[in-house]
Image (cartoon, rainbow, N blue to C red; front, side, top):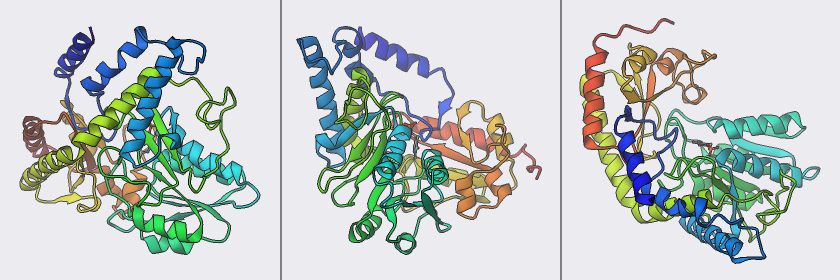
Amino acid sequence: MAATIAEEVSQTSQKRPVYMDYQATTPTDPRVLEAMLPWFTEQFGNPHSRSHSVGWQAEEAVEGARRQVASLIGADPREIVFTSGATEAGNLALKGAAYYHRGRKDHIVTCVTEHKCIVETVAQLEREGFSATVVPVGTSGRVYPQAIADAITPRTLMVSVMAANHEIGVLQPLSEIGRICRERDVLFHTDAAQAFGKIPIDVGSMALDLVSLSGHKVYAPMGIGALYVRRRPRVRIAPLFSGGGQERGMRSGTLPTPLCVGFGAAAEIAAREMDDEAERLRGLRDRFLSAVQLIAPDVRINGDMEHRLPGNLNLSFVGVDGEGLMARLSDIALSSGSACTSASLEPSYVLHAIGVEDELAHNSIRFGFGRFTTDEEVDFAVRRIAEEISGISSCRS
Ligand SMILES: *Cc1c(COP(=O)(O)O)cnc(C)c1O
């Protein structure tokens, strides 16, 4: 039964466009799906039911998943709070800490390229009377640790800087920032939605106090994530939900056993395969980039190439309308650096922050490579770009 569904999923996916949008989401790994299935139907207990073995078994499964997730970031399982994803985790980290410390410390330091779930959470906290300093990044997309240090004041409660950027894949200098925060007695939160399971994250050596994680970026399903909350020295956060006091009082609500199990299985697989996978993805990415540079010599790379997720490229095609190119590449699932197709005509704030002019930002495309990307798919994408690029005119602006 389990194998049948997993097989069906992989068969249907073969008829879809070539998927090159792994920073938007990842497919659930069939091994993850298989681990999840019994927890929907056969072992469906409420993990918080204390009075019978149906509940105990679910609880055991959830606790196993908690250990698997914790292990991948060098944490204690008791430091993992399951959430619905990284958006909820980021909200819980920032609002939870802000509300807990209200009246004592009220200033947050963050950086300009953060994901909307952090940007908008900080904006909401500002409307509620907290203050924030948004530190710029260099043209490489990296934040200067010294700029973080300079922004910290005696009122600073927390620094929040992401591990890896969702658009340009750039990795931030977490260890350096962690050291600064520890010295200044400031909490350090990182949004590791893109980094978890792709690059090593260690809460000890990086001096992390709070870490937001997402399942669906790491081959687990949508709707599950976690917040790491340091126990020693203890990090205190106010809960955002009122309820049964699950997750040590920090996140009330019945845990979704199948999703937790899936997230744990995904973490376990990543722990085993991360190094080899990173090497393979770097190979695919470099193969793709060299080929594209031959077809389009005027292509610009957005973001640092050295400190970067192995499976990410963000390219601006000079003189080529990125939206038009993407529209013609409908057999490849891609994401652009502009929101031309949505209600807003604003180019990406991340590209803007690294100094890419609006026209080039509109002409940028994010290429995401992942676990199921093949050599053939990469070559197909290169061929299709070569075909389309000649017939494309310049972007209106
Ligand atoms: C996807 C993503 C999020 C949001 O995660 P969800 O689990 O979808 O809420 C947050 N931050 C970054 C960097 C992401 O890539």
